[in-house]
Length: 70
Image (cartoon, rainbow, N blue to C red):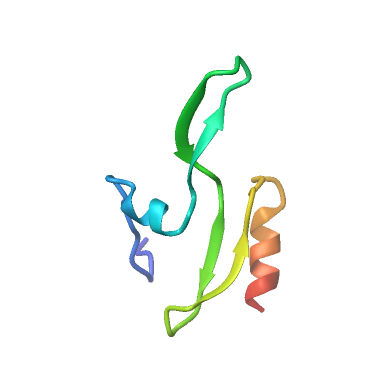
């Protein structure tokens, strides 16, 4: 199956930093570390961010995104 759009591998984290999702987190044990805040961005045909879903939870999220795209 061919995916009809390009995918991004942000190996250095530069895109995550530009979008503000590279954040300091705290583990349940209290240790701090850096990681990606789960966030979905819908970007329109002109490259403008049309909608942001912060603090994404997997359950039900796909339906939420599909609804926003309609």
